[in-house]
Image (cartoon, rainbow, N blue to C red; front, side, top):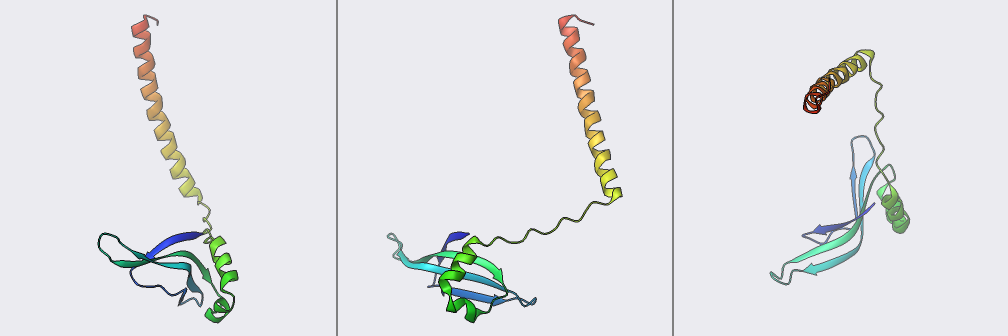
Length: 122
């Protein structure tokens, strides 16, 4: 995914941060442009930025910037696997749903009785 990013200083085109796992967080920027605020004359920078986590080296990425930028643009973080619920967790969830349904049923019964009284039907 590409995002428009703003910076107070001119950013590097590649920001590569090695993680303890050995993988790296990678930010890639292109179309870096200087922006001057017309009111304050303050200078900032904007760029198209793509992010990904990778096990490629910084040298590999620098050697094929455009290819890696495309890869980072399409990268999506992995979705963590949801651990299956235990039987106890499922029972607690079901009991909560039953309690909610009973409360909703009681409200509906009261509304039904009130409607019957208003309509004179019993």
